[in-house]
Structures are given as C-alpha cells and as structure tokens.
Image 1 (cartoon, rainbow, N blue to C red):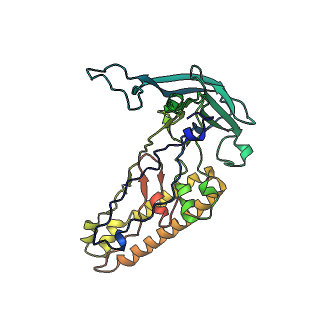
Image 2 (image 1 turned 180 degrees about the vertical axis):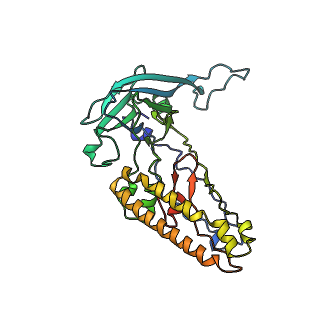
Image 3 (image 1 turned 90 degrees about the vertical axis):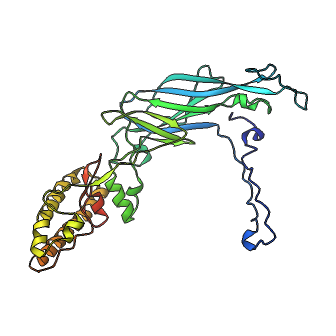
Length: 366
C-alpha cells in the first residue's frame, strides 16, 4: 500500500468480518448464550517489508533482488475462452478483470560505515518503490560484546511503497503484491547471537543459551519472515524474505557407549550385583573421559557462559561419583541390581558432542 495513502485506503474493510453465531435453540442454557463480540480493531495494510542482518567490517557492497507483482484493471468487454459476453453491472459500469504483471529488479548498493538516518534508493522502473538502508556499528549499540567480530555492522533494508495513491476504485493498481526482498553479500554474513541468555539469571534460560550457542539466525524480518541460505562450508551469503517460514528439527539420538549394557530388558535379567558390575563397569570411566573432553570448550566461552559451564561440570562430576558409589554398593549383594542414573550422555546429530541432555539433570555443556 502507498505510504502516503489516505486512511480509507490503508485499512481492510473485510478484516473485521466475522461469522454469525447460530441462534440458541429453545432449550438453550447460559452456556449457549452468544457472547457479546469484542470491539472491532481496524486492520491496516503494510507500506513496507524489510530485514536486518549483520555484516563484517570488510563488507563494502550489498546486492539486492526486489520482487513484486502489479495488478492492472482491464474492462471485461470481451468474452474470454468461450465465455458469454459480460453484462453491465447495475450501476451501468462494465465489470473489470485484473491482470498480474511480475517484476524483478537487481540493485547494487554501497555500504556506509554508519548512517545517521535511513538512506533511500529508487528502485528502477518501479513507479515509486524505494529501498531504505540503515547502517549502525554493533559496538556502538553496547550489545553483543565479545560475541561478534570487531567492526561488525547491523544493516536494515526495507522495501517501501512511495507510489502516488490512486482512486478508491482502482487503489489496488498502486499497491504491490507478493513482494520479496533478497540481500546478497560477497563476504559471509555474521551470525546473530542470541542475547536473551546473557541478561538473565534464570537457570533454564542460561542452560539453553550455553547448549545452543552454536545455533544462530542470520537475519530477522520486519513485517515478514526471513530465510537464510547456508552453503556447503556453513557460511551464509544470502538472506531473503519469505511469507511462510519453515525450519528443520534435528534428530537427537542416544550416544553409543562401548561395552556398557543399557537395554532395560537386558538389565532386568541380570542375576545379581556382580553381573550388574560387569554390565555397567565401563560406564563411569567413559563418562568421566567425556566430561574431561567437554572441558576443552571453556576457553572459547564468554564469561557468562563459562560460569554456567563450570557449574554444570561440577554437577556432572558429582553425578559420576554417585553412579560409581551406587555401582560399588550393589556389586557385593546377591539379587541386587544397580539402578541406572536419570540421564545418559547424549550426542546431537549434526551438532557437537555435548552434555545437552545431561545438563537438565546436572552435568555439562556442549
């Protein structure tokens, strides 16, 4: 919708339509009474869509792809595909049909170090569309310290409809439809860190922040969703808007622990404590070796995450000691089988070996 359109053209007159509830029957109770409808809220058409992303200090240009569709009204004054000739409306006007015209424009924009306000660029052959670009240094915003490279800039790109509004009858000719915006960078885009876990003392939030520190987003949409394209090297050079977002959920499967019996049906058949000692003997050593290997990540963590990791490692060490004590207590008893601990070390498919599942029960980071 044109940014300068009047209020009548900005709103959707059908957005507040609602289905009428059927009248209650003769045996209606209080529960069957139709509730009073809430106050209607007007819905407005957007005049822009956009996305924000992070670029490196070395990035000098961005290449944009702008897509949209225009619809043109045409008199329906001739039969189409064998149809009968249309009859005039009651008002005497001939009915109209709409023809879609797809458009795609590519633009290359030079990136400033910083902009005091958004800089607008005309979209060629668009009859009034503009791209507005805003650039801000991330360090100047006072966020993400130590989580992005020095010189990282936040870039916001918007597609804005600055067309001159048309008449109410033909207002849709000045709208744009199925709009899309893609941003390409020769330099890899910088992953956007999740700052939520950095500014909270909530245990679950901090654990999740630590566990999923290697899971990023590369763009965020404004008035629309976005999709990042990741190449074979794991880098992102392109982010684009999308109307229906989707995401993949990775498989998480238990890790294989060599020479340790973890099948519950097999453990239930163990005759006594010594049998359980044999079946579970290597578990504690492998668990402790795995904890020691996980500690190698500590130097790479931010102070806040390192504090959380050390707390989880301490819980994991305690859990390993409890497992060992329980196993020894059961090893000398006839007919006694050691009870398994609540969690087992796990390894997420497609992610680093970690204590993700174990962190919930007291151990580790990944």
